Image 1 (cartoon, rainbow, N blue to C red):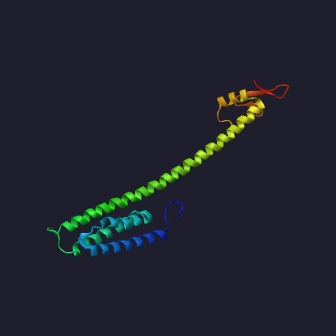
Image 2: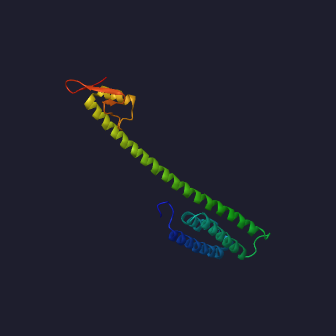
Image 3: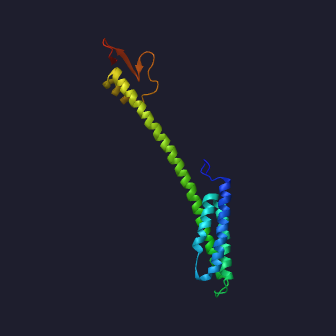
Length: 189
């Protein structure tokens, strides 16, 4: 699978060929079993394989092939219907069903990939936020040790995003002018 969520060209071709072979095998089984056994649901296997791996158009083409195989199996099994239009109607209904399944499956795969990408981006953003909060907590602790916890809380309450270069050359921190007392403790002026 490629990084963009797509399968490689080789995988797409192999899946399409496998879907064609599986469809032909199912068509043969459908013909041999005749009208006694309905195996139309099994035609979804090659359609799903082609649609999921190779995309919408290969899925639709395999769906058309499966419809033709089911139609020929139905008509070659001998006359059993009163109206000759019934096998055509059955084939059209089967084709509509196959088209809907192929369409929905490819849309589901695309939506699933987009959801995975959204989750990955949001996870990265959350990790970045966690790291920023850890750095801010470290700044808060450092400020608390140097200027006292009360002043640090006041500074952080005024601007909760302390962590950038907020200290100026004249000793201002977020609008507070710091002056140092006799024992090295800082006081906000």
